[in-house]
Amino acid sequence: MLHDTPTTPVAPAELRSRVAATVRALRTGAGRSLGDVASAAGIGKSTLHAIEAGEANPGIETLWALAGALGVPFGQLLEEPQPVLRVVRSGEAPEVSSESAAMRAHLVASTGPRSRVELYDLRLAPGEVHDGHPHTAGTTEHVLVTDGGLRVGPSGHEVTLEAGDLAVFAGDRAHRYEALRVDTRLVLLIEYP
Image (cartoon, rainbow, N blue to C red; front, side):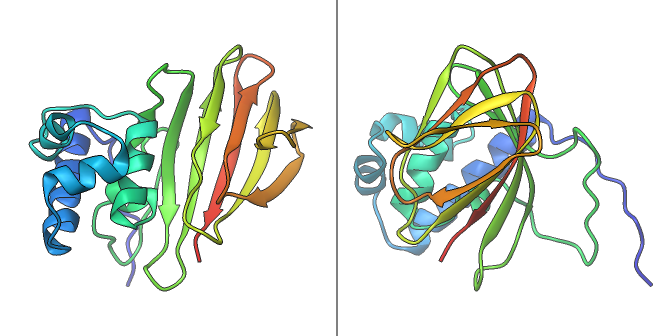
């Protein structure tokens, strides 16, 4: 019998600890040095050390860079082992903000290593542009605007979306997100090859 197990919001300290353990395990499991992974991610060795020690609060950009350097999907750095049934109540998913705090991402769901899919609930503040770094080759992003308005897409080919509109584009090239109104909210599904 499956039970609907309620979840509680992930405390920042728990999320830091989760990211620290995962990054450290992935790096050491691959036999890579702090300097090698830091260089590949474009961050300082001391920053990576602080992340692995659970002493840093890395933003979305840093986590994306680390995920790329480690060759894993972004969500793998945030998630905990999955129970038989997982329920995520509104506002309870792990949250990561961009360094400017203009984008808040909640990892709602992700799948296993064979066919990796991540589902995010994103909220963006207007007036800020979030430049997305290219993901792994063959990655596809699906963006569904649920509230507000958004300009999104591969850099130089952005489109304007309103609530209810969907855009699908290659996530393995530079791309941009720009909220056009207050309280812009969207669902982002990322498919990794």
